[in-house]
Length: 300
Length: 270
Image (cartoon, rainbow over all chains, first blue to last red):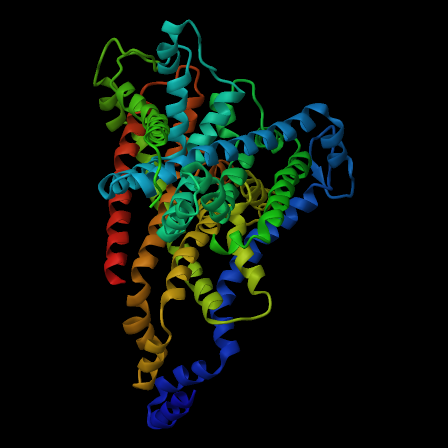
């Protein structure tokens, strides 16, 4: 940094306003502190503080008569989650929904990405890339309403199926999975498509020259290169599905998810709600930890 | 080039068609149902009417909800722009102990389920701040939204900073510009598009958010998503909600248009 020394000398005669700039330029730690103080105060002071307080509340007790929350220490709230079979099955059901949504999204995103990147003309590709991102902006509740309108008893889906003598899933577990896939699919489709586009053409040529057919090329060349994108996408599809309960409320019929139980307890019994909100946190953290080594988190 | 057989191309094309149908038919149904004379959404539509559009545009609750959503989203975006940009600069320009943790901290509010964020903040507002006499009310909602919006600005600005050369700034300082002048004339113009894109994403995210809002909105205050949700929860969901949804679908074309323009501008800059 000889240039800095030179400029320092050059600016020695500069008036007072510049000297603050110069001091800041030299004091690295001071600059870093200046940058980070505000964001960290916010994130730690508001967010982490609230999370920690929520965790602490999970150990507090509710007075059974007045239903007032009292500070204390009890593991009963956690015990109730494990002992209550309805709570346990809801946790497992939610986990299953989140995994199904992730798998379905990937199963549709890969062929879509291959089609867009390798088959579609540039014009069609442009159109499709707008088409898959457009619903992202269309509104979360609007999409749930749309699925509700589609799958309702007298709705479009049953109308299409009626001539075949079958009826659709109505409001059920399957509709929740479909709706969540509908909601989060773009989060999977966009990174997968981007990754497929970035694969150098040479690799396909080399694979073909070595005698691999197109399916084999997709399986042994494309798929391994897609792994980071699939993981990045799955973080969204998995964790967004895991915490959702609005879809279950409006298109799930009697299907309950973890969020449904937290929401229904938050006013009646805050400590149980707090204890139960640890469940999705643990699931997400396990998932993030499992995929951390792949380096996918750095791209988020 | 990947050479696929004709059959493979056709089956891939079919999958794409199914995906697009799955994405767009439901949205189309909502738009058509906004003209449905019947009170409850049904198919096929037998009677068309503009009644619901008239009701929606003269509805006071809808107007209030839109205004609330805009105010909250604007406030949250302003805070997120400041905090997200500061963090992006800190993480890109410096290496320090705990850098990874700071990164995680920014991503956490969006990585953890919305209901956890919502319940945690509502717990703090209702069970800690209120007993000591601090009522955040409306501002609490903005605080909550800003917290999960930071990551949008952070990601965009950080990605841009990584591609920027620090030489230009050093040259500017060498030529006698102070930090402020350099930031204004040299640094900011280089990441302006990312800054705007991040702000746009933050605004859209906040405008659309419902779960955190359920738990942090003060009583009696509806944002537009809360209003829609309350309508949907009614046994005879009035068709007015289809009108609002249709307007949102149409309005979503605006940010898509802008993001396309931003991407194009970025490609030209490169």
